[in-house]
Amino acid sequence: MKYLLNLLFICLVFSGCVGTDYIDDPIVGKKIVASTESVALKVNDSEKVSALYFNEYGIAENASITWTSTSPSIISIQADGTLNALSAGQSDIVASFSGVSDTIRVTVVADENAVARVEITSSKTVFSIGDSEKLVVNVFNINNQLIPNKTIAFRSSNISVFSIDSAGNAKAISNGSSILTAEVEGVISNEILFTVGASRMGNFVKTGGYEASGSTILKIENGNLILELAPNFKTSFALGTVIYLSNNNTSGSMIKAGGLEIQQITTSGFHSFNITNKYPNVKLSDYKYVIVLCKPASVIFGYATLSN
Image (cartoon, rainbow, N blue to C red; front, top):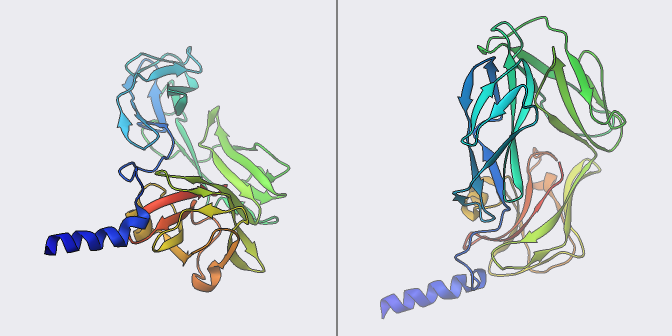
């Protein structure tokens, strides 16, 4: 009898959070993840790379990955992921399966003194009009040793949004986005996506068979960080339906542990939350997702991915 009463209590507490397909994980979208972002090789060297395919539930599956090289005269790749460096230059290697792909940037050098990698970093990626940022650039040889005093060419994919001078000083000109890169002796750096604007928007997608739809916006307004759920926002409800900001959209327990709890809600439609009043140090660019979470059972009803 005591066991039955405990079971009944658990069912009553959590029944509002668990639907008929509660054993399913949240749908997060298919993806391929390559074993590395970049590789540097000397001419005639070889190296094997790999990639994992994850289905729409975030579960790794066996897959027949297709490998291609954008410049086969520089680098070739075999079906098993073995790279063969043929001549000096740079090429992308693409791993693809089931309509998704990931890319590895491969640089081939003629000797150990040549530039093998160019790395740019930035302290932030979301800006307001008029903001500026100094890009930091490091140049390495194939032995991962810094090479000083190299001439660097900077590029912005959209100069009407972000301008950048020869010294790496970038400035936000207008709302929008731009990809910034640096090039040294024909070797192109990693890409950094910069966004200019005082807001980030997203649309909710449902998970696990629950309801979540509509749009949301995270914005700066009168110096405060404001999160708004639009009038078209709809969601499932249960005991303890709470809005979170998070950098995770697959694990309810991780969202509760590492996310930012905003507020419990009991109705769909328009809501406005002043984040700054509760968390004065949180910035516009700190979190990637807006989450609708059944907090007691750590069940995700839906999420919105905020624009970068």
